[in-house]
Image (tube, rainbow, N blue to C red; front, side, top):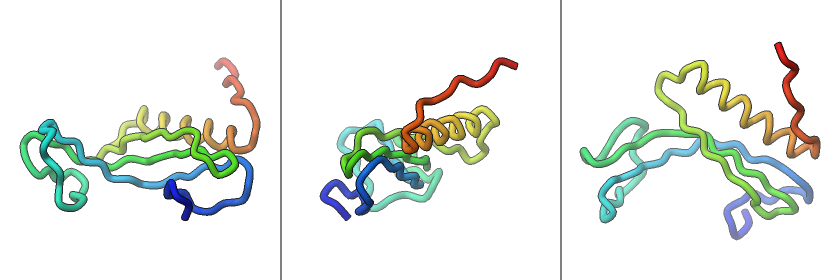
Length: 104
């Protein structure tokens, strides 16, 4: 691993996709002792949920990161958003500009 936590990869552009759990508290002083299971909350003023992190690296330096929340019961719109974000990331990795979808 490198200093910023990125795995060591060959030079050039590459994309990392991983599952990540986040906990958000509305109380600034609250910090959970350990990550909470998906959907569990430590108190009434907090929310826990999972998401997918898409990070873009160029020559070993992280240049972008997107976090897409995953619901327990995702909608078709949620799935389409994830697919679009993955598509854009992989096109960027390949060095190709995104192409406009043909009108239907």
